[in-house]
Structures are given as structure tokens and as C-alpha cells.
Image (cartoon, rainbow, N blue to C red; front, side):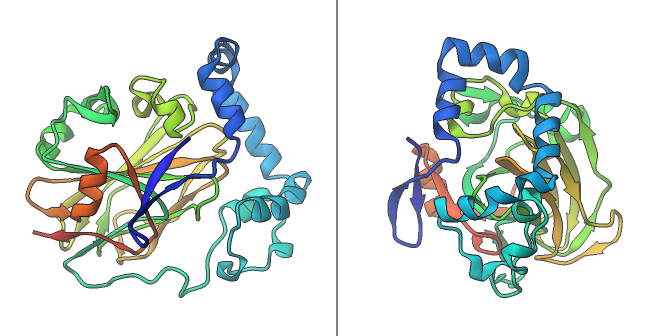
Length: 295
């Protein structure tokens, strides 16, 4: 059971997890863990499932998925009948006003839909995965020169569930660097998996870039792949000016994660998100929604 905080209703809700029984079996049973180690975490498994989700054979999954998870079709840019495969639906675009963006230059917005954790004054050697499990920024980035830049800064972790809108966006105007890709495995990023696999983010496939932003310093954007994620696709043009709210890229099928790192004394995260994070609860947010302020 995964409980998260709904800041709109100021209450806790239970997440309806896609493939919950499969996740529990895989990450909690001896047989499941063995299967995970031999097959599921490997690239081939996710590649093959990704190919299925790219094929017309997967189209019949779309309506059932929408109904099972009560996804709002009114937000879709295209009618569901026009999606050629499940990945077309999964990486769907939304109508223009589905995600209002706060363009105030002092406001920090969420880069996507999902459930968010945030930590301020971070220790690069002890980043929190879940209570009791940590990892280091050096292990995550594999670049010693970048680690000191974000010492005592802010870390924001946005977990995108399979039921979420799966495009991610820039949170400020600026110039974004080229993307650096790091090969890795394909563990689930669901909290069930995060509690079982030490240093999970450091083991999974991931990629990152630096946004030299107008208002919030140099922001490190990292996208982390997961089980059954066919691809992380960057749609922005590197070293060219981007605008707040503009699309940066999208994930194909699977739950995924966007991690942001801010330099020291650049921003402050909204108190409700910080307090829930301290208690170990994620907060539900939408792309374009305020999550913090410029210092």
C-alpha cells in the first residue's frame, strides 16, 4: 500500500498501482527476486516489452487502461481511437490548457505530473532514497566535478506512475546543455522497489543535462529509466534557448523518475512538500504547478 499526500484536499490518499500484485511478487518473494535478478532488470526484457508497446498488437490495452485508472480523456490532444499503439497513448500530448503554467519568474514549477519528494541542504554523500537507504551524488552522476556544485543545495525527486502524463518540461527560461547518457539496469522506481534495492537510482539507466536558467542558477536535470521503459526521448535542442513550460522530453511505457538538483541558496521548496518528505510521504503534483520560490 502506497500512501501519498494530496495538497488540494489536504489529506492522504492510497495510490492505485498498475501491476501492484506483480510488483509485490517481484520485489518481496524469493522466487520473484530471483526472476528479477536474472531477467526483469536486464535491458533485453524492457526492450522486448517496449517493442510490444510500439506495435499495433498493444492498441487493445488502451481503453482498459483508461477505464481501470480513471484517466481523463478530455485532456487528450488526440482521440484515443487515433493512437496506433499503447506507447502512442502512454506518451500522449495534452490539450494546451490541461496544465496551466505559473510564469511568475520567482515561482518554481513542477517539471511534470507525479508524486514529489524534496530535500534541502543536501549532503552529496547521503542523498535519501527512502528512510534507511541512501546513495551519493557521485555514484549517481559519475562526475566528481559536478558534485561540489550542488553541495548543501536542493534535491527534488518526481516519480511518474504509469498512469501519469509522461512528458517532462523545463521549469525556467535558459540554455540547456547536451544530454549525457549513463548505461544501467531497469529496476522499477515504485516505492515497493525503492525499499528493497539499495542505490537503485545509481543502478538504473539514466541521463542528465544542465539548464543554465535565468532565475534559479544551474539546474541539473536527470531522467531515470525503469522496468519496461522502452526509451527516454529528449525533444529539446541543446545549447539553444528554451522557455519555461516548454517540453524537454518524454518517457515511453513504464513508471519513471525526474530528479532535479539546485545549487545552494537558489530556491526554497514549499513547506507542505518539505514536511511531507520528512515524514516519508510523497506529494501529488501536476506539471506547471508551483512547488517552490526563488531566494
